[in-house]
Amino acid sequence: MAEAVIFAPNFYPVTVELTDSRTITLLAEGSEAAFEEAFKTYFKSLHAYACTILRDEVAAEEMVQNVFCKIWEKREQINVHTSLKSYLYRSVHNESMDYLKRQKAKAAHQTYTMHHSKHETDTNNTARKLLLGELEKKLHHALNELPQQCRTIFQMSRFEELKYQEIANQLGISVKTVENQMGKALKLMRLKLINFLPLVAFSFLHF
Image 1 (cartoon, rainbow, N blue to C red):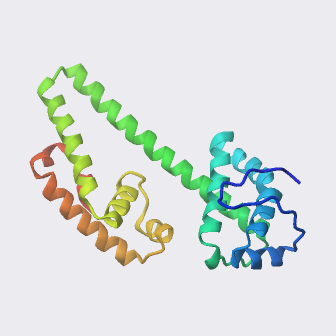
Image 2 (spheres, rainbow, N blue to C red):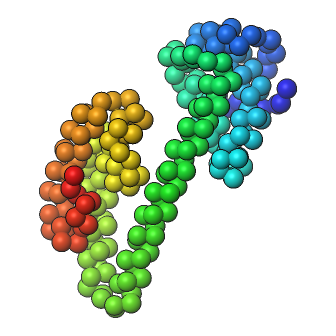
């Protein structure tokens, strides 16, 4: 059985032999010993599995840690219809795929920024570069002024390019709520960036 360090408070080295169903029950009841046993039992294999998806040992370890942290935080709502092993593998898979989506969106955003930065350098349009810099500040400021749910949904839609149904699934809300929050976010963003609308991509602030 692999050794592992648990990043949770008040954990003590306790060895327990538990059946799969009993482990799930004890986890739901908040048993730290059951949580530690599950972590030590599955961490190594889950880490290896995440590595096959991410090709990055550090990121893979982070994904597995995230899954176990979420399980502990939401232990009272844990609902496992299959085996604990299958549940953990599926959770790590989903966590890893979400990570890849975020990395892809981040890379696309960086490429977009670099492209426009290079374009402005090539054209030597100093005034436009200053204006774009101001736009970036206004954009970040406008995003920070959005209510938290509005901001999260807006970023998932525009930066991560997720569909409304995907956003609803990830956040555990209805598609209608996503649509309403996006409408609110777009309205507020347009008001905040009204002086920069000619420079903002049309699709960025429209449905």
